[in-house]
Image 1 (tube, rainbow, N blue to C red):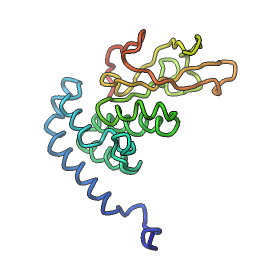
Image 2 (cartoon, rainbow, N blue to C red):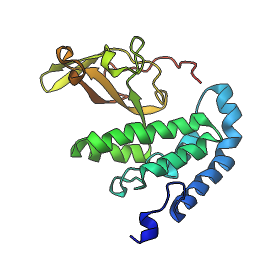
Image 3 (cartoon, rainbow, N blue to C red):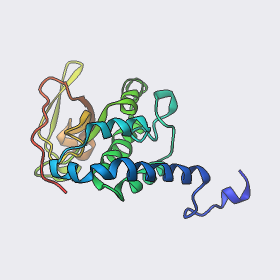
Amino acid sequence: MNPRQATRPITELSEDEILFRETVRKFAAEEVAPLVRRMDEEQHLDKKLLVRLFELGLMGIEIPEEFGGSGGSFFDSVLAVEMLSAVDPAVGLVVDVQNTLAASALLRWGTAEQKKRYLPRLAADTVGAYALSEAGAGSDAFALQARAERQGDSFVLNGRKLWISNAREAGLFIVFATVNPSVGYKGITAFIVERETRGFSVGRKEDKL
């Protein structure tokens, strides 16, 4: 690393970052903008647009190439969300949740087996959601009421989550629940739940912004 790279101010983008930003900006202007009004009126993400987000690698920015992702950085995710949100914040949020919550959680805390199983899906065609919020707790994880009870080698989850971004499109959910209420926040953990899991269902869409 040369001295200039070592001291490069955070306000100055690298050539690769500039190229990536402009690529996303162009995509947002040409492919997202024409759909914004209709998607707002229908309150539904265009399926073909979602496919394009995967094709361009925007749904797996930080996921390593070995798992089919783009192998980019967290800052690349920030740039992508910024460029998309300038045209449609709803699309920006889809990409944001996918990269900085769902994929990020698996990258940092998932087991080797979980990464091998789920990261390729998140990079290729599966939307992720982060199920933390509840009616009585909001985003206060310490107050959540969802419970997880061990039964043999598995856990049974009971509870409801609300206001979960990406829930309508998601095929994979990271769901927070309490395993041991007696130890407070230390008894809370996260579970990977696939949409097809028996007993799991997605409720009606809420009218959020």
